[in-house]
Length: 90
Image (cartoon, rainbow, N blue to C red):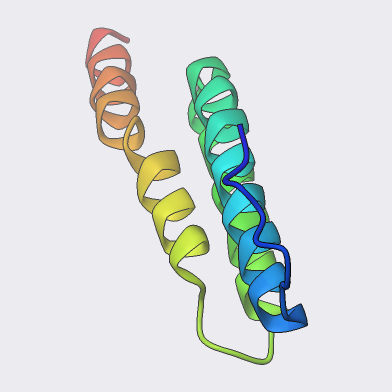
């Protein structure tokens, strides 16, 4: 699951190892969450959470945040098309 740890590991290398592991875990968890996102409201809420975490940081968005945004917004176009179709019927 985790890469082998060298005998002497600097704190910087240890932090990189932990960050990489956290990103992998977050991606797996995000994939599960994305399968549940099936409404415009739930996608909007998820995007708002990501936006909030980005705005609260004192740095540029991380690669993980950018990837999370891109993955989360994927279903939005299809959901908006479905909404437009519903509006046309009424």
